[in-house]
Image (cartoon, chains in turn yellow, green):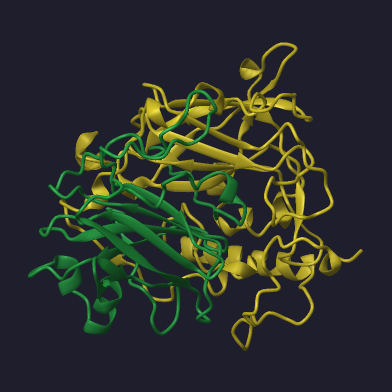
Length: 284
Length: 185
């Protein structure tokens, strides 16, 4: 069965938007992996040339990254407008507390009557700001596919089984050292329709808050050694290799629980100015 | 200094994880000063975006930016969402767009001195969230608005539709592209 005949609506590639005309236009047939890989290599080469010419290596993906086709019409073309107001509301942010989480939220294997299928894992790490200070008492949210690579979402109809004992949603608050910890199962890789034979490497989606709304982060954690990394335009949208490596958790034997679960460590650094704190350059 | 963790797209499947009961309703039910802010999120072809997620952060009516826990107030018995407590204003809202790209929040009016809601936009296809602001009124002086040409400035000012309803459309790209903000420093 060709990907085009799959019932999946993974990317919305069949959306009515035809895309812009000219180079980079969406072709009538899906691009091949070779096409996408060549575009990724070209984008990485352009980014490397900019760094060689003196630009700082970018921490974040460019919003315009055509190998990920859905980005084409969903990024602004105008430059962002800088806000320097020290009274800006964005320099503070929402707060969360014991009312907002329950004890079982952090264990995704205990949210149903039975045990989910798959490889049980512990994922833990620290959340800090870009000055290295722990982010305390803030909300961490995760969501993921099950061990077969299927999301508990109506729009995910690809032929992999749902697991009645796994939803794939977790929450916790960071502790006083900025630490978080989840017990879950290792998600599976899954196909999507960005291009022909497109597969996402296994990943867990993370949502994080800092002390200021400016530090908001939504990202994805990957597993070490996944052979799908070079083929994936979403991971590869981060053009700097060192930055990409920061999205990959480390297997941590000390976090593994004997006869129970394998441990992965993933530390997170929030970008953007923190709340009511001096400029990091003055504070260090 | 540690380097920041890169952003990645929210993707298409956050819908069973991030939205929560009363996410669009920071205003206590029946509050006499509650307002409604609503609009449509569109892409560069003018098409509505059915899988965007918007978050809002704002000062309380008295100007406080302290916020309050309880946006996601939970039921310890079932683990479900209880909705907000109807008393304390958390300053935070989260709302996914409908199939037609439309969204709405019911909130309290921010103070006249800083009459805006901060808006954070997430979507499938958007690698890195975008910040903008929805101004409910035009302040006499505002460093951000005053530095913008009129046409761009207009993208940040919600249209008053009367009866406490304000319209704020978001265009990610194109002729009507919304002004998006950078707080990097």
